[in-house]
Length: 339
Figure 1 (cartoon, rainbow, N blue to C red):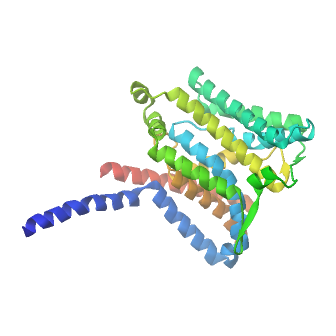
Figure 2 (tube, one colour):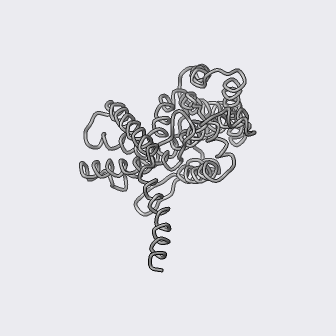
Figure 3 (cartoon, rainbow, N blue to C red):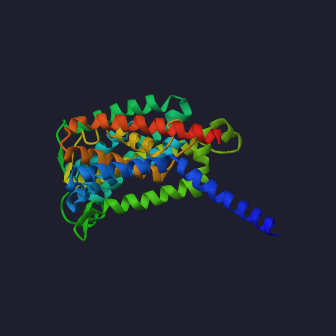
């Protein structure tokens, strides 16, 4: 009897131990540990790092890149990526402001037109990649040049003053609120809401299973009835729309729409996603990891300036972190395969 009870208890503990072991080996957990270490190092190096003012400054910009990273996570999980997101980030608010200032459009209608433009850009990317069969790297690199060139041409290279009159859309996209000594923007709510929605899609919805299956083995997914091309096209559209939304939020927040806004964001966003544990080759994605990756890169950018490291050295730190995380994730994956 005692032996039977001990056997049942051992069998009951086995799944728990396996779950704990799986958590410890997960990419997002290792990313979280590194984030905690980085925060501790910067906090010890400069007492102002965890001050309400500094945290408020970090959180002002984090949601904008984070929103783009959510779309990129889903797209990378499906085995594709989009290099045009930084250019779309700059073009969308420029088009909106030109429609309002030169065309006399209502701000709400102009915002809707800007999002429609983002849908068109994403759809073009998706159709060319899926129907013609050109690599997403080449397609979106070309689109980056087209979109950035269009933004520069229609503005003649000059930034535009953004909409700064009080109203519904300003409050919706760039309103601010205080929590004690901390100041946050409504973009944080956008980021939280979209993150929860992306987690639901990737972990609990049938679409999430389709996305992972397409990224793991497209042919096998198609054989099982997954509409791979349609899913990828919609993911390209979603990524482009999120980039445009983030650009509009940024323009409203700083009251300026610049044709060069978002330059280099495509690489920084991919870095956030990869550092968080999403596989560049597709098939494995984690929204929680992306959030950790976004926090990590923003903390590095902010922390190295506070401790006196030249801002131009930021790319060195990011490059080293990415290499370290890729090596760590590869080792964890090999270890998991052996187990």
